[in-house]
Image (cartoon, rainbow, N blue to C red; front, side, top):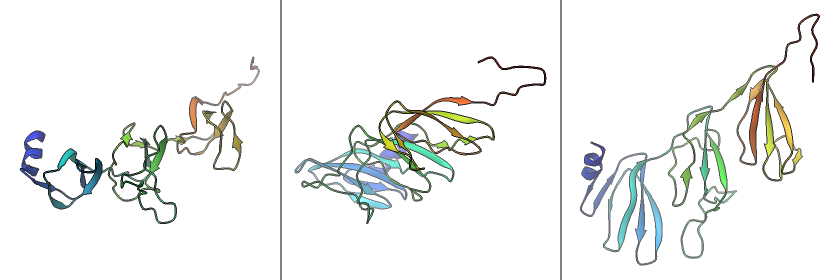
Length: 187
């Protein structure tokens, strides 16, 4: 039924893009792939080819996150997509980006080369007296202002939420050890 649905949306050169959906269109004249967002009835020209879509935009619910590989570059002040000299979207190849509901409250499309690494997941909560053991995979300054070098390990102690970072990996979850009376802990 999904093929039938997509065929009904694309009749010849007319492509019906529903709300909160998008398509990727390749222009053969200048070899640029652009994103067209719905709702719109898009008229495909002879020199264009639809590479993807219509696909639903990603909507991140509150207290959730997703990881995007090869993210696009946005202007820090205007949040507009940056284009190169030829009109193609600029991409940070080989990089990853964590997107949350706070950073992307509105539904967003995936631009050319962007890829969703994992499904949208809940932000993990670290319980009281628990911790995540983290390993830095590259040099960075964390949210608390500590400079972390690649290979550093540290504990992120609860109770709190842990928003994953692309600069570090979770090595293990550490649970508390309860020492009963008349017992000892051998280390």
